[in-house]
Length: 378
Image 1 (cartoon, rainbow, N blue to C red):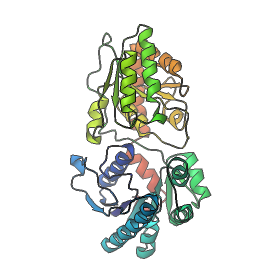
Image 2: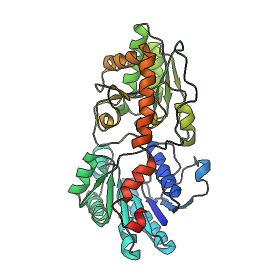
Image 3: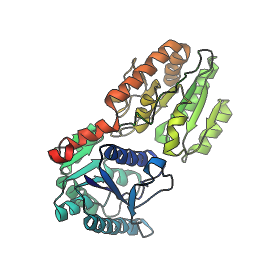
Image 4: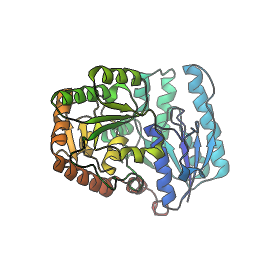
């Protein structure tokens, strides 16, 4: 099957380092593992091309224009050009990552008569209005409605996103949380000895809502209690300098790696003994890739009771849940694992088993395609 994968969001380079780019790459891998031929049509390429995806054909139409208004118009123009390219190339299925100011898959479907999957990762209109700048909201809403109404399957990463999609025109949105590549992300062959201090880690963009400052405070509290543990922060972002200063001032034994290419993340995860998702209280619609990766790497996960984290982390089995923004509660959970190596190992094994059984990208894609015609879903 020929799949046209449309990624119109200029904030999501196909071969970037952040979670959205990883998501794009894993969907490509999942299609290719079925034997499908995938061409990606995007507004940004990125420069971290994994070796196994170097042969993927990517058609790029950059967004032109400076300033919010020109950028919005530029996205629409880029989508028009990418749509023309898809129609000229032909496809059997168009799969679009939902983006502001794009109903490109709907236009392709009208032109070619092919089915459409629309992958919806966030309520983008509200998100843009609240956190950034949205000039032509009327056009954004209208295009979102057309994209959602025309989709044969609107695949949403969470129930709140599905509710939003339904309110904006999707007839029967399907919930399909983010997954993980359990072949690429694996536990280490040899785990640390019980007398070696564990490494506690965070992988992701260093932004305030991720709560990494809470994790640094929790590590300082652990040290005050006489517990030995190292902190590894993997990623970059606007808070990096501030977090490095915080760790230094508190005397936390911390290493900051900076941004890491997606193909290098599996090796970095093998350096960890505990994975942390210390989110502050925030919007509850997200489906965190990092948690699935922690599970697949065989890491007990300590995560905040926020968003979809409680659906992924089974308290007392594959990890522990804590109060968002509470450094002492986070320190308590970490201490439980630091003090009990046997418990840590049991949770690690359960985490890996859960990831393999429930969160593989192949299963996620199969669920998404289950609502399509038999010839497509097979």
